[in-house]
Image (cartoon, rainbow, N blue to C red; front, side, top):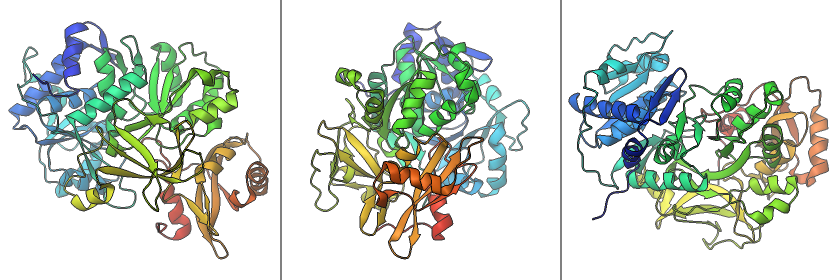
Amino acid sequence: MIAPLTPLDWKRRAVKYYPEKTAIIDEGKTFTYREFGKRSDQLAAALQNAGIKERDHVAVMLPNTHYMLESFYGIGQLGAVMVPLNYRLAAKDLAYIINHSDAKTLIVDAEFSNLIEDVRHELSIDKYIVVEVDGHESGLGGVSYEAFIGAVPEDAEAPAVEIDENQLLTLNYTSGTTSKPKGVMLTHRSNYLNAANFLYHLNITHDDVYLHTLPMFHANGWGGIWAITAAGATHVCLRKVDPVQILELFEKYKISVLCGAPTVINMLVNEPKAKEINITTSPRMATAGAPPAAALIAKAQNILGLNIMHVYGLTETSPFILYCEWKREFDSKSPEEQSAIKARQGIELAFNGETKVVSQEDGREVEWNGKELGEIITRGNVVMAGYYKNPEKTAEAIKDSWFYTGDLAVTHPDGFVEIQDRIKDMIISGGENISSTEIEGVLYKHPDVMEVAVIAVPDEKWGEVPKAIIVLHPGAEVTEQDIIDYTRANMAHFKAPKSIDFVEALPKTATGKLQKFRLREMYWGGPKKVN
């Protein structure tokens, strides 16, 4: 007999073997695995009583709370599809996603319900389940979450549903930076195998305490929502990213593992309290979302004692497809060399399938010489089933069973892949390819630079040239020419930025990824066209 691959089964296992183990810590509340299991079962039964059937879609707009974890499991157990919403999107984008996803019900946090109130008249749904939050009133009406699940007895069992591992478990929408958001269809199987990679390669064990710094709505928390439960480890919820609170939680709950974008690492190492606090647990931190600068990795390890693990992927791949495997032979290298290695995207994970870098000219795999540039493509167990109701975009992204990522990279002699840039971010100046991430890596070594983004700007002579937009450390006194001179002294002159702008903050997504398209629009008068 073959059992379907579904991460939902890990909740059953956790409840069976670790019923009294602390499953979730959410501010002042804690739940054992037995309690977490019962609440998830109640949610599934309550949704069924409300008319939600197998394969129906339920939208959820919640921060990192126990309600969000319960929603992932409760909705999935019913055989329904969860649509996690980014509560930092504009109301018009949320309205588009809710309608496009065919969601029949919305579970929403009261703090963010005003966004839905603004577009309520445009929505195709009329059922609202509101998580009540102190200090926030919701004008949506509907039913409170606690009353909704409380109508079901605590000893009620979840509805018995036959699950096909290839049916949808979640419908995750991309940010829609250059067009309408696209719905990425992820199955039970792809979620399961991505979470298996999370478990294995991030070394998750029963005794781990995981801090949810990464939004759970973003690619299902990279799989952490499933993997931590699989191990019977402890979830620590974090309603919003606050570097001071994160540093305090490290010691309060002995956090051993977390995930986040490089900008989150940057926030932590630049928090003044980082030099005052003594972190004894040496937390493992997986980072992705943008290539982390080697200098930033070195700071995280030296200042906070974080063990940085670089992973790479996309929402369309559930998301992991590469990780920077650490080998014993690297231990003898200098700290600078080690940080440079950790900045690479790395090699295939054990359960995801095949990934390689291919020439954009003829499609052959690039030479493993660390020089020949190509696009990362992948196929296998974690690639999406397609974009929801969008066969044209699906056909553009998946060709001959390979998913094309849009990331340009080289492959080193040991097989480690290293991203040079996104295709749309590569700077082509006078016919020369210039990597924006390479320039950013140099600038992060400057003692006065706290954050940096490099983009192409128009130039009459060269077509386009690099420009650096920089956030300085408080109190720093440095000029545009100082920065230009610094980069020219540390890299080829033609690669150095021709101009510098100093700003107070850089535009970012909810997960901390830089939104370079916003910066480009300031100088190009709209999106830069990519040939």
